[in-house]
Image (tube, rainbow, N blue to C red; front, side, top):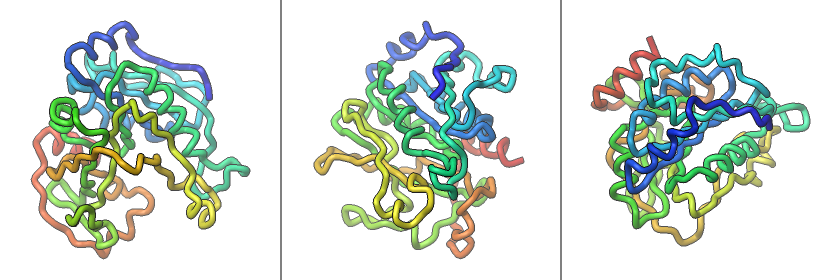
Length: 266
């Protein structure tokens, strides 16, 4: 991985951290083509006083041209942003030996960088994710007794609806949840991404699907209130076609989320 790291003002990071009793460090791995999308979806997080560091790792180039970074819309929140670069290959369908994308290495390197920051919580953010701004406050104010947080993930179909396929419904602790994910955990857990044996047997790229291994016993909080929204269907991204047979249901988005999504899809 390249050692090139860009940030606006490294000295301000501690100021953000000391505004709250607890803080979140976010990491996001993206290709250069999705950098602008990530910057826009992460702008909601950047405005939260509970988010102190945002690390974006560009995975398909060794250097970044600052002229390509449109950061004005972040305002003073740009001081929370760190951008790093590295060449981890390209392509989910290609084996690593043929130059395919090494997702495990990229995510672990991003994690390692965010683990070195003075944060209490670590959060994974994909370029096409949007979280309710109140979610960051809830993590820091109400989740201190827990080690990880689970949310449902709503795949938006429009500005007023989401789509759900039966494959996305999971029964956890006796409750039916919509595409549940654990994307937030305490930094002290020191979790790392691991390759899946099943994926390695099924796909040419053995890092195509990967996840962190959580402890067998862990204090986990489920946040049932809609907080996590996925935009890949609205953006016509790969692997969203299976939702064509799904059920479309109404959802009311907060105004700040609706405006951000509208800007991205128009």
